[in-house]
Image 1 (cartoon, rainbow, N blue to C red):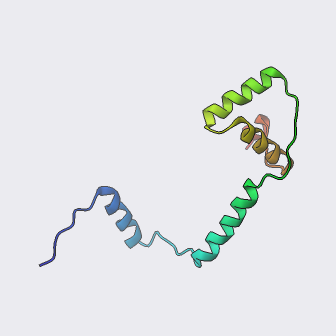
Image 2 (cartoon, helix red, strand yellow):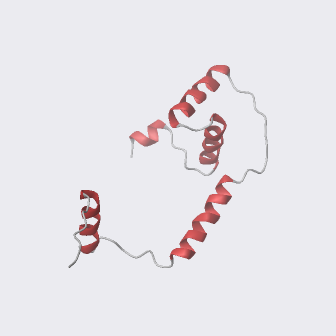
Image 3 (cartoon, helix red, strand yellow):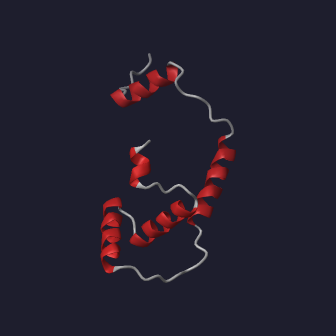
Length: 98
């Protein structure tokens, strides 16, 4: 006689989603994992140290935003610079027009 297993609502939703064909194979998962691992390592690689002077009020605002985001303020500054030089940083007017 088979033992009846209790399944949570979340597990039932996942099973229903799978059985209805909503899930798609990602292909070679090892290859994808290696690719994403390489991207992550390159993103986090720190190559040069710089010193900059900032307006005290600007630094305070950056530090407050970093606290809200839960990241170090140096990481936030680095991210902003990276987005700017890669053309992915949008100003408020660009966002409003999207």
